Structure formats: C-alpha cells, structure tokens
Length: 288
Ligand SMILES: CNC(=O)c1c(C)[nH]c(/C=C2\C(=O)Nc3ccc(Cl)cc32)c1C
Image 1 (cartoon, helix red, strand yellow):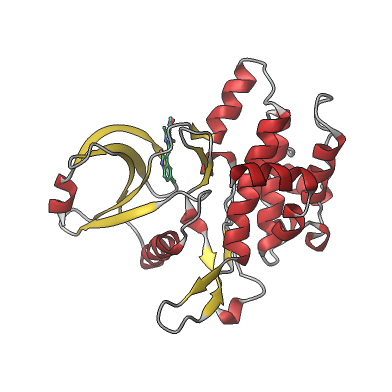
Image 2: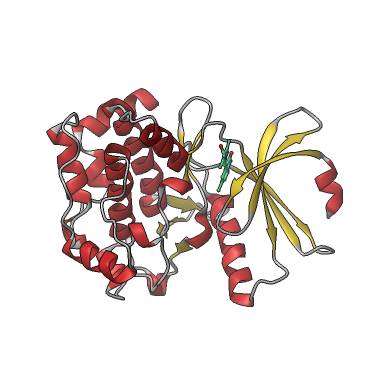
C-alpha cells in the first residue's frame, strides 16, 4: 500500500534494471540510503508477472554478502506498481567501471580482478550449491538457482568495493523435475554460452561461461566475442576462440579465463573447482 512508500524520500534515478527504473531513496526514520526498483506491471503479461514474483521470491531467500540484499517489497495496486527495496551500492555497476577504465586508457589491476572474480564465484556458489533450510522441519534442500544473465551491468559495488550480484530478473530456481537442466532461451547476446545458442539446455556451467566473459572483459576492457550481427556473434561463440589477455596479466589469470570460456560445458570448472584455485582461496580468506 502506498502508505509504506511514505516512509521513504525519493531521490534521483540511478539506473534501469531488467524490469524498470532503479531509484535512490532515503528511509525517513533513520536516513538510511537504499535502492528501490520501481516496476510498472500494468503492461506485463501473466508470464512476465509470474517471472517477477519468482525473482522477488528468489531474492528474498538469498542472504549472502555478495548478493544484493533484498529488504522489502511494496505493491501499489492502485497504480499497478511494485517497489523492491534493496541495499544501495554506492560504487555503481561494473559495466561503468570497465567503461571508465577504457575511456581513461587505464587497465584494471590484476589484484582487483581476482577480488571481483572471487566474490562473484562465492555469489554463484551460493546460487548453484547453496542449501535452503526449512525452519520447521530443518529439512535442507539445494537452491539450484541459475543466474542466467550474468554481465557487468548486473554486478554492483558497495562503498567498500564489495561485489554484489544483482538483478535476478531472469533467474530460475530449479524444481525437482528440472533438477539437471533448465529450458531457457534468454540471455544477453555477448555473454550467451554456446549451449544456449545451439538451443540446447542451460545449466550452472552456463553461468560459469558468462563469468569467464565478465572476467575477460575486466582485463581486455571489451567482451571476448564481438560481432556486428547475431549470426556472426553466434559463430564466434560456438568456436570459443579468444585472444590472449593484455600482456600485463599473469598466466594464471589467462588460464582461469580460458578454463571458464570452454565450448564444452563439462570442461568448465564448477564454482567448487574455482574456489579450490589457490589464487582465489587466499583472497577469499581476506574477505572473511
Ligand atoms: C549510474 N548509476 C550508478 O552509479 C548506480 C548506483 C550508485 N547504484 C546502482 C544500482 C544499484 C544499487 O545501488 N543497488 C541495487 C540493487 C539491485 C540492483 Cl539490480 C541495482 C542496484 C547504479 C546503477
């Protein structure tokens, strides 16, 4: 009901997510700054509304330091708006960080890249391998959430440069029947995995492919696969050939990017495999 909205002072718009506008707001009672996703669902189909409900439910259950925190949702039935209140990420989105470095012709430091990769692996590990414990029965069930739209625009930084995976607009938590694979035909062209393009099935390894593309782009300041047409892009992605990273990056970083951007999903490391990588382990301990 709109009353709950009165508790917040609207500030400037800070971006647009998969469904609508994102606005900076200030909570009146304590002055806390938050981000509010404002979605006009008037024109949404039933399927889109169901997907929106599933996104909110996924986000509500996901509590992790590297996933944007969901605080509450307010439905304004009168004006067909849904407001999702989430933590404010002062550092903005990773796409802007990459764009700024590219404009200034300055590369992103290797340590920062390992730190961002580590935090994204931890966030994906929670999605892929995390468990939901039923508070009553103490029953643990695997989340098996696929993000399905991992890209620099959906990665955010807070004031302490902690990475927050956001915008689960296209995620799908897998029910038992879909346990192994999820049928899906969505995704951002640049980061689409080969299996997605050949209309086959999406699974956790497709998120790993996208993560590889994000890490590649942080190093090269452009995506690994670029083309003028979707057909050309699809052909390049199915080949999976990527250039070496710029010379200032280590062989280890080249190796981990190449491992994630393998055409064969089975050859790509899982989040568990990646967390076993010594370079990732050390930095993740600093995070604790
Ligand atoms: C130019 N925009 C920004 O710098 C910016 C800032 C300061 N924050 C954001 C975005 C979010 C933000 O601050 N909190 C969020 C929670 C969920 C999602 Cl999907 C996005 C955000 C953005 C895009």
